[in-house]
Length: 449
Image 1 (cartoon, rainbow, N blue to C red):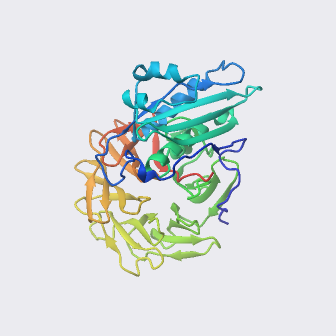
Image 2: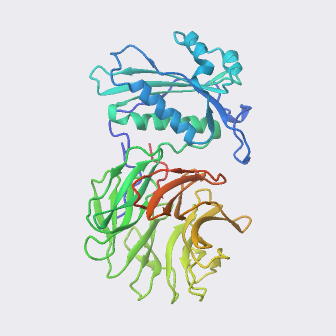
Image 3: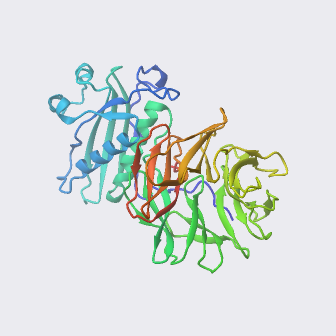
């Protein structure tokens, strides 16, 4: 029933080649400017990206080089690890080195560059693709860090550049970047709600479903190949699974009543879900053999399960406190509420939509603060929560980026519903969608290459 996790050729379905050209040193910790992930006040790395140089090919009539450079610059700035050096600062130095492969590390350091990216590209003779060769240099330590060459069709240009941007972040932090990730969300249209996908940078928007009905709660599989959601297409809230190309789909679970709020376990062996078969909303797990196991047994509503990264715990929403106010709880993922259940939300009359961070140390959730809703983050080490969103409007339905640094959420203001991305610990938010009807964002995991 459940899909295999080693789907070959996914994501780069056409020709894609990535070759490491040279790696002179691999000890990331030796670099004096490598970011310490534990330090919140670390300055951003000053980065210079030169113009992409066209080599040995037909003319670039459609501006592939300029487009690719803009994508790379935006990816790295949105990562919030880098600050971009402006072109006038290094323009003369760039001209001097344009016809040579040598890098004057001292001069680049003098103009303020800590890292440098140089790129050559060629347009394929048929005009339907390109090759790009990226080189990354450390001007501070006077060394070549990384080289990558990609060959891909024209429509995969953005994916190629996203992938290299993620490689650059990995060189700096030891953890893969998130430029290649996507967000699934619901968009309200013609009386229904359809699932859409969009890249992290706000481009490549596409509709995944065309069900002409109400769909709810999209959730990614851990390998990024599938999305499960609740659909009313058969006039019952059934659980549907669809691949992210939209080509394959199946009804995963159909019982009379609610089949909702799905959440895949980290090992993809189970799906936590909410069923109303017991005249009440209870949390179950469904395994690959289609066997159900009930986790909650309470006369009050239990819903919105989310797994811990190790798969041992599930956080969920329940009004079992007896006050008619939903709160956030944690239970054992195998024993359910027959074992210890721990409440983690306090000081608010309404809390919902828990989302466990990929690092395992935080849980984000929607919380009523005054007359509005805001996003709170609970720290499992300190057992304290803090409100991370501010300003007008209500912020709800958080979902984590796979590196655990960002949250995406729905913001409701003046009857508009749009999605915003915010770095945890940073009050500034970036608007991702402008449809005024966006709901239920779900951030993908890292895609398998």
